[in-house]
Image 1 (cartoon, rainbow, N blue to C red):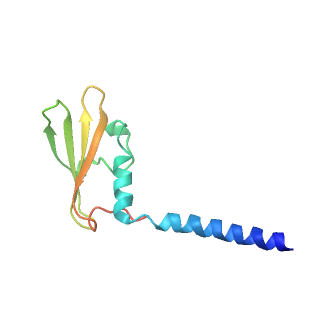
Image 2 (tube, helix red, strand yellow):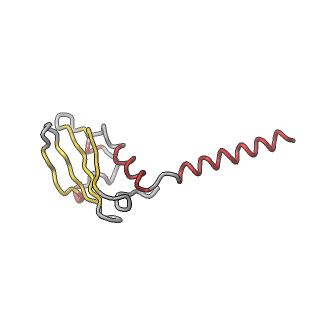
Length: 108
């Protein structure tokens, strides 16, 4: 009988840990994780919603020969994010953003 109680307690602890892990990421951290997850992919193949023509505000030729694509998201506030793309491969080699923790968010 004692063994069943220990098993139930372990299961409860395990489930609680999983649930806390899901909610412990802030919306801003979630944004950054999603942004940086696009590195290594071609710009046309990244997660939906990140490289929409509607959100593209500028392109910039960088001194290293790469191109920076600049996007603006206005929900919930102004957040600019950029992808640095190697033109020889069309792959994203870097990503960055400009905005604060309440504007550059993805709610988990």
